[in-house]
Image (cartoon, rainbow, N blue to C red; front, side):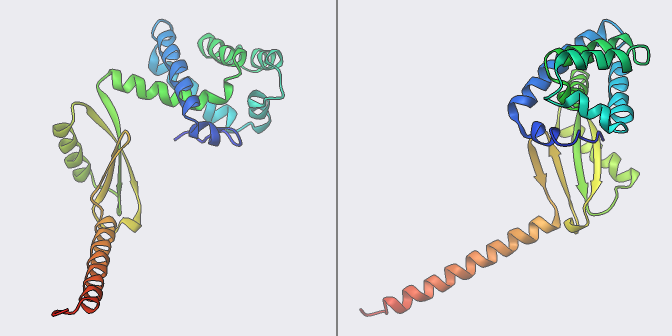
Length: 213
């Protein structure tokens, strides 16, 4: 998973308008990639630039995303550092982002581009959270159930959370299907509390209005 750029990206990822902008650039990224180097190659190189260049060179990353560095200097920096090392495609795309002050959105754009590419191929990422790591058999069973329930090929992203105790939490886009034991216990506790409050209130009403009054 891509490590977010420090300082700016945390807020960018929470900004709905920035997410929408990233999707627009992602569409352009995919369109250009299809007619040149190919989508998978473009995504791989872009991710490699984020993981192997930006993440490992803090000063270079700061210069690229800093709002105090002007566009011209960022373009010169890209020309000096990336040209000849990266493909013409990724170099040109970085320059486009620099001209529009959108280099801080690069991780978001790549993520959006991968999601768009997967969806165009009938695939979709599904988060599956369980208390213990999934076995190969469980992965297969969950995948089969998802295929029968949805009209897409699921890409399972499994993670563990011991606090779930049992069951699982499945997230498809913005919809969460929670069958974890932790949630069921919370729901049971809430129902018991509601019942107790109801019984207490009923008792109060009975004493406030004794029969025969």
